[in-house]
Image (cartoon, rainbow, N blue to C red; front, side, top):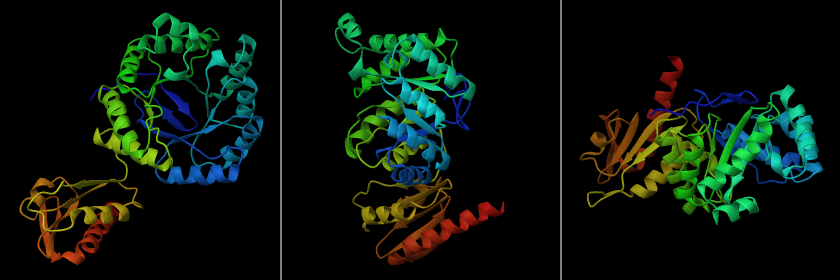
Length: 356
């Protein structure tokens, strides 16, 4: 699929936009003032594959804590600022790699200028983030309710403040919990500029409902070539956001990270507890970061054929099952040995790749 052509920016050492890979972001839900807890969560997120992390900065204590966080984080850190330009200045002094703020909400022109002058020499990008739930009153009166046009007009207000100061190190997001509105807004803005876009469905919900909304919304935009960096917003452990983000990207062939599990939905031919088997395999795959595709199939009749593109797989039968590589059966083993035999083959494949 053809991606929209955008400007290339850098969040620390991570490129965003241009021809760079689409990055996966998340946001810590610890108190940023607690640098130790925040770093512990950042490391967990980085281990799951997170490319860029954002931290809330509600007060000066949080802004000061960022220095320790940035100095010890394995991935670039973005400071999330609202209303107080002094927090942005301190975040910059603390060494953050990016800012998320809206220039029109942090004070008058002189305050915005102070932030721009501090960010420019350090090449710190600013993400303008417009949310449907916090549109200016005059735009709500003009359009009657949150619309794509209102969201885009709000974004351009903030963009122009920075452009008037000759600052174009910008990326933009237009987030709503409503999927069709989000799609319409991003499509409209994408037709009007070449800024890299941060894509997500905000307040998507819990893991169950939020995954569906995020996959539909983010996946649709990415399939249309829109989006340079993504965040899946889910209530709960942010590690889930990273895992889901990669599954969305992998499903579209846009990133190749970690294992891809293929498993059939079961049918009347299934004579093995496939759900339990698939969950067991999925749990054991959690520590693998190398790209590899694994199939867990419930039928030895056509399981290897249906999953012939998988690097390795198993197919269950009555009391026994098959182990196969690229659709070719390599052994038949007792049912209780299937998982161990599967991971023996997985380790062989990974070792073979390291030697190449």
